Figure 1: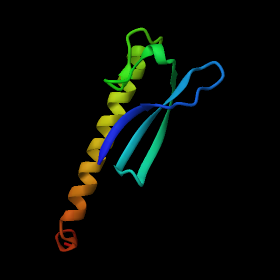
Figure 2: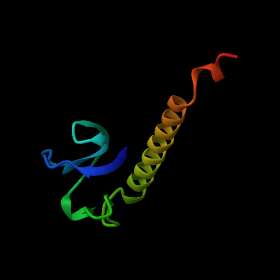
Figure 3: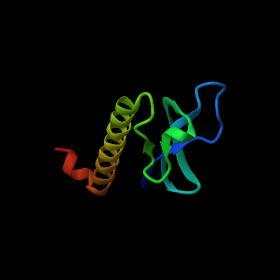
Length: 92
């Protein structure tokens, strides 16, 4: 399972491009989570998948994205571990 932060290619009127979190196992199984943040291409680093320091909400957005990525990674790890452990161990 991979997690990436993507700049959506469809701009809104004045806010810029929406930033979404992509979670996917394979190209057919993807989920997109809107962040509620927007940016212009000049304020987004495509290689790092994060805002540039020129973004007006740089610190808030960077903290939000790191927190979300960490939470998704942790919940994915827990889900994977839970499904590999036998059910009998929980029935006590």
